[in-house]
Image 1 (cartoon, rainbow, N blue to C red):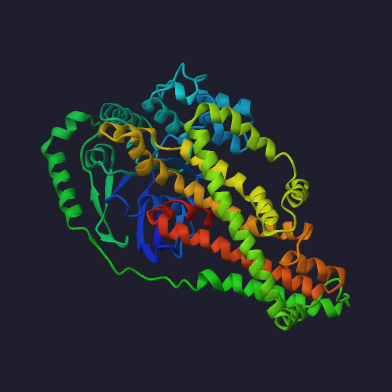
Image 2 (cartoon, helix red, strand yellow; image 1 turned 45 degrees about the horizontal axis):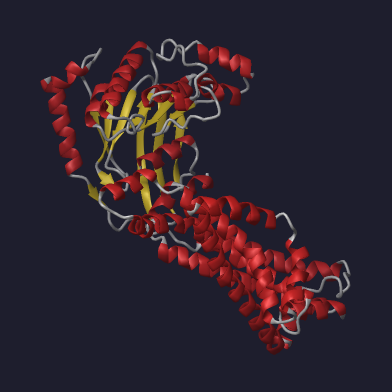
Amino acid sequence: MKALEINNLSFGYKDSGKLIVDDLSFDINKNEFVTIIAPSGTGKSTLFRLILGLLKPQKGNINILKDGNKNIIGYMPQKDSLMPWRNILDNTAVGLELNGYSKKEARKVAATYFEGFGLKGTEKYYPHELSGGMRQRASFLRAIVNNPSIILLDEPFSSLDALTRRKMQSWLLDLCQRQSNTVFMITHDIEEALLLSDRILICTELPYRNLKSIDVNIERPRNYETTLSSEFIELKRSILNVLDSLEENKGGYRMKKIKDYIFPLIFLIIIILAWEFIIPYFKVPNFILPRFSEIIKALVDQKDLIYKHSLITLGEALLGLIASVIIGISCALSIYLWRNVSKTLYPIIIFSQTIPTIALSPIMVMWFGYTIWSKVAVVILFCFFPIVISTLDGLNSVDRDLEDVLKALGGNRFQIFFKLHMNSVLPNFLSSFKIAATYSISGATIGEWLGAEKGLGIYIKRAAGMLQADSVFAGVLVLSFLGLILFSVGFLLEKILLKYRRGLKEDNHEIKKA
């Protein structure tokens, strides 16, 4: 009986434009332990995500034996991924709770496994109080406590030290020999695969098309003495030979990126058409909501005037945004580097955000008059806070182990700051910059509403006073466009400065597209 069947499966991430899995087919029998071996970064974890239903295949299908179970798949990731706020018993019972058990019933069922898993006595402990090996046992128990049809193990012991990994391999080997489970495991460790598996699948071509299947016909029960046998060594040699011959299809298959844009474009066209034809149908007055064509006409008829006002607003927003970046980074660095400054400045910054910005804006006009600087000051009030907080979070999330490595290599504080801290903080800073960029247009507009002679804010205010709704919407449309331009600057900076993150996206953000 087949526990898992994969038929003509194809999948690729849109960002990379290449297929990872191309017309792949294989199956796993019930109560069989199968391991897949392939080099790092070739998409093994992606295959697991497809089986779990976290990603949607572009072609083919995946069939899993249901056995009457509601939760048919157990999953153990590379890290233990235990919830730090739950004790070990509650962590192992969470799958049962998600499938309809009360908390009391879930705890009772999960507790019956603890002795067999070597976890007896740890029920009330929290994850940080256990060793890495014990946390991995708890993670594995969480994966099987629902009695799944198949268990997926994604390099379950890769994060452990060599001695602990060997102990955990022995423990899993003993556990699998005592009870029948269907297991599909990813590993880079050939000896681990041979020791645990009934069958090994080896990737022979990239993208995944063909998997070479090798039966591990070594008698059970097995132990580490098995690794010294001639049969074991010969199987290991044959697997290494297959891996050495692995070839990648460099060209791959370029997926059409037009699909990324066609649906948003169609949706936008539908909205515009609905806007255009529903308004006259319901006889909505023009001064309340004009048709889209009337807004475009107002935009064209007053293009010179709108252009002049747009330059003023954009200039105010840019000056305020640049000042916000300088002030925000300076505040974040001061708070991070000097403890006394942190105790004084941080509460003031937080307090400043409890006062509505719109309430402070008139004060800026009182201080700076109707000059450009009152608008710049309002923009700063809008923009500097997200930059301060995100930059500070980035500085506090620096990899301390990497910092220790650079210190050990002889780096001084100045060198480490520029080589490590500045690069580590960039993702946080650029995310806050994109937020601040869009806020800057809003800040400039509000500043103009409160008092100005030029700018889109005053243009919209005057048009509203004369009930010229088409001109009001035309101004709003241009404001949105200006915000989009500034946001795009932040997006472009991310593309240029964070090139290394493009590869990471394949493993992370595509999960949400399930």
